[in-house]
Length: 597
Image (cartoon, rainbow, N blue to C red; front, side, top):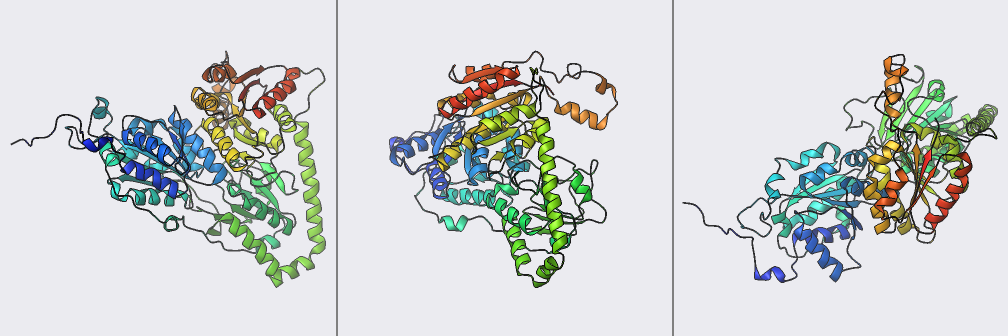
């Protein structure tokens, strides 16, 4: 005999009462655990979420996360990513069932690879359909969006995935997700909950934030640095913790001849004005081949074996928060020692060990002349490097065009000294790093992954965070992005958000009329193949005729954003000056810069 159930949506006289629901507890938990921002793209799975937002903003406006409407999921996660990159504080993204989860796209790859502490919450299609519970199915789409295992869409990128099954322990679920997301190696956590669960009434209860703190790492010291003739530190993302920059500077000042090479380009790990600075390089650098001791610190790809390898006699030690790279199926290094350790702690301990070791101090004194000579050579080498990089910006008096190097040199000269750069320039990234020459912790930020399109939302999140962290100075944020990557960033959504929430950024689009990265990849494998003899148009990677990139941004902002196109060298400096002034005044600007390669 068939069980009699309601056939209309669940109703109750209590529905109009301001209830304490699982959704409200969810936001309460976020606040209690330090999450202050939610970047949202709402849908039919979020009635109780929307009710909780309205209730919280009315009843507890000063103790409720700030809500940012994001028309695109990738931009939402990129904003959260950018904010988390600046602050190292977890952010929240709320999206819509399986389709919203899929809409995260490359941003979930970026958050995972870039180690951004972000909690992602997605609803689930209702699991009842005859009105048994509040939240039961009410719309046609609820049948189509009910997939067998929604979390598997993103599980391989997440540090933690879980389902909220009751409002009675929802705060513990949020705490667990945030604890994993903020423990090293940090990264995204994914929670999901059906409408009925999120509508469930619950009794208010507190949680203790101290019970949900992230795991802490310890570090071990080593003494090889002092004995090496050509010591080298290779890093990639150690600068995420700004304190590590000073720790690495201190070590470089202690160890004569020590050089520092960045092979990740994710963060400002070491200042360009220090004589140990070798710049940022991908895959290879002569210093890797000549070093007799290499200390790898927080780096995913210190070198590419098909392009460059250390000497067989070099000693390699790897200190990393994730030395085994557990998310990479293929990864190994010829390291004799590996330490799972926090970079800042490790570098500080190395310095302390050198200072406190009697044997090492005697060694330094006995070879003082040799150490002085190493430091002199290091200084001369750094000066020669700077001269070489400056020469790449040279132009003849009658020049009418400009390359990426000259453009970025002018940007660096005109921008305030505390400007923060959000970089996603792909094949031009090294050239940009050579000219920006960041010197301040946090001044250079790249997503750290390969999911192109991060920098639009990322720059918005960075600016939002900087204004909150530094309300007096409100540093300028400049996004430098390739033309193909600009299209990946969903500019229609980015610049709508920028205008809606008054988040001013300066975007410089490096317009080289197409994707040059695929050509480079092809030439690395087929240097003399058929493709090497044809242009980008025939390789199907050309954007000629070029879109009006700045016009796209202006249209998305209803004509409010400043848009400029620059092709002539004589127009470059005036255009940059005007754009910087406009952004400093509170309005975003986009410059479509036509560069020559």
